[in-house]
Length: 93
Image (cartoon, rainbow, N blue to C red; front, side):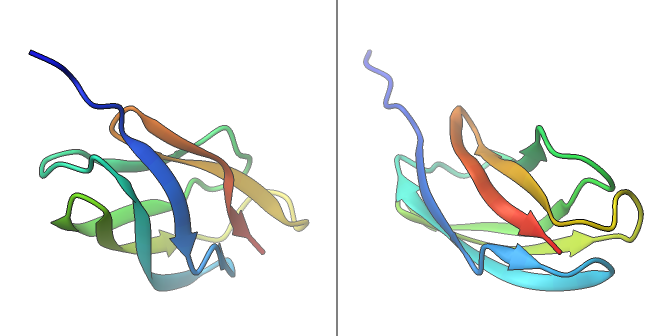
């Protein structure tokens, strides 16, 4: 069989303040149910995605929780969904 590469094109909104819960929409291609959303390569408290719903192969909705902690300056995170990564895709303020 063939495998399709997961592509993460955008996350909207792409920023959230510390100590917040933000609904987001992730767009891209080749999304499939059961894949997890995570954040990596940032600093401070890692954002956590919950209520992840694959609407279709190009759209995901989720809730992103950002705790307080870490540097006071803005922090940029990569967004991962399955094998797809959106580098520097999410900013914690």
